[in-house]
Structure formats: C-alpha cells, structure tokens
Length: 259
Image (cartoon, rainbow, N blue to C red):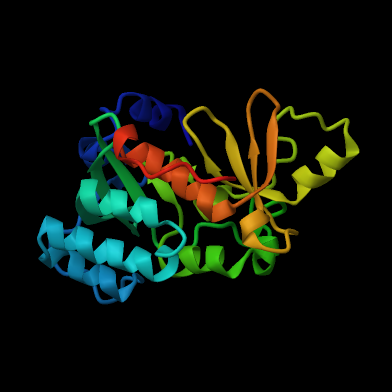
C-alpha cells in the first residue's frame, strides 16, 4: 500500500457510512450497489436481493443469514444488530463485494462494519506473501462452527477499511512473534504457535483460537497487552461479549458470562 493511500485513509471521516462512501485507493472508490448485481458476480444468492429491499428489510435479511451459522453462538451480537443496525447495504470495491452494516454503537455514534464475501476468501494462495503462516494451511483444524461462519456468512466482520475486530482470513495467523508475551517460557512459545488471531479489540488485545483444543468452548485465549493471559475460555461466548460491547450500551447488555 503506497504512501498516498495511507494519507487518504488518515483523512477519512469518522467510522460511519460516510467513511465507506468516500473511501478511495489505487483500486478506485467504494460504490454502493443500487441496481441489479451483475450475473457473473460471485456473491451469495441472498446478497442479490439487497439493492431492491428497504433498509429495515436488508437488516432483517442479513441478521437472518448470520443466524444460520452463528445464531446459537452469537445471540447477543445478533440481538444488538437487530435492534441498533439501520441498514445493511451491498457495496463493491475493486471488483470485490461486501455488505456494509451501519449501526449506532454503544456510545451512540454511527459506525459502519463490513462483512466480507464468503465465496471469495481473502487468504493468500500457495506461494503468495503471507501464505506460510496463514490459517489457510491449517483450515481443516479450525472448528466447524468457525469455518461455517467464514465459508457461508462473512470473511471477517469489522471496521472499514482496516477490518479490525473479527479478522478477514488474510490476517488470521498465529500470535507467535506478534506480541512480546514471554517467549522465553517454552510452554508460552509453543502455545503461541498454534493460537491463531481471529479478533482484536479496541485496545489491540488479540483474541485467539487454539486449533489444538479438544472443543471450541475451551479454545479461546485472550493475550492482554500487559502480558497477562487468559487460556481455555469459551471462544464463541467471549467473542459474543466482545462484539456486544461494541454494539450495545452497557445498561442494555446481557449478564456477563463466566469464561
């Protein structure tokens, strides 16, 4: 990414719909799709209906689509989107389609998150930069429920253009070497090699998935930036709380789950 692209990103407005609408880089501008999706476009069939629906109908459709893969895993997140999301629009940038969710976050500010195209995964191909430590190499070891979300719902879900929060597949790699977390301890170094970063909170704390865990309810690890760590937490349960905290005001959130 060139210097001028970086400068354009720095000058973007606050993280709402306007930020997405005004974004431009070497691939061109982001365009919100208002007419029929071209027949040759590789997108989920449900996405083709979005331009013809009202904002409320679009939200209802996409929350329903999310529910097919993570309804039982992210109930708080879906409730927050259902109640606070005002639109879910189809957009295209450089030939790649994604859904833009605009909602009012826990602080009452407009925020737009994007959900990537599950039929066009962003991970690098064999031989490309980043492939050596990308999750693609161990994808079959990732729990089926996590793979289902990425393969059928969205390739990542987070702020645009950086897509922090729930990472796009191109960014999912082991936490080893990313944080200074005491690699002189052999057990920490070994664990960091098979814990893949799937999420990052606002403080920069990675939330990882241990691909060697026997079940997803004990596969989550929080690697706090002060070097404290929480191992063997419920991956979906904690992720639901983290996403809910972004979307839903404190007074409206559900009770805190045990980790």
